[in-house]
Image (cartoon, rainbow, N blue to C red; front, side, top):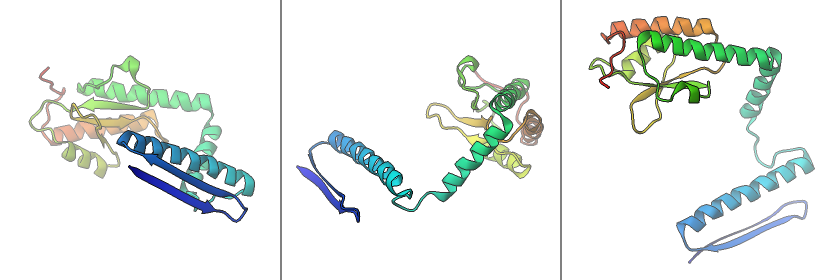
Length: 188
């Protein structure tokens, strides 16, 4: 049997004492979640009481959140949604024009990003295409699926439909430079 315990006394006469006994990995996982919840509840209580964070605050995260909210309200919800929708549609138009296949059916996509299947082309190299685009100011992200080789295109941020159209010009050039068949070839 294993156990864990802690006692903390804070300057304001509050004492935080915990002791648990556990036997299995599942109980350990549950313990971790419980400790995180208790720490979160205490952190909120401390902040509400003192107006300060108990530990060093994540300053860059706070500033980033503030900046994002300022930009959101400055652009307006309807305008922002319209712009993101136009960017998302421009991504799909560019993919269609080159013959790429996305992994998730479009009607199920959230509109935030698109996961694209690698072409079945012996000349395809994610690294070479990535580097070509990156040197020209555009980034494609490696995929995160375990079953297929993919890359991702994002529809978020301060980007416009015109930015996406410019990206697809560069992507087309990257494909040509690396002798990748256009339209993109898939065996299946």
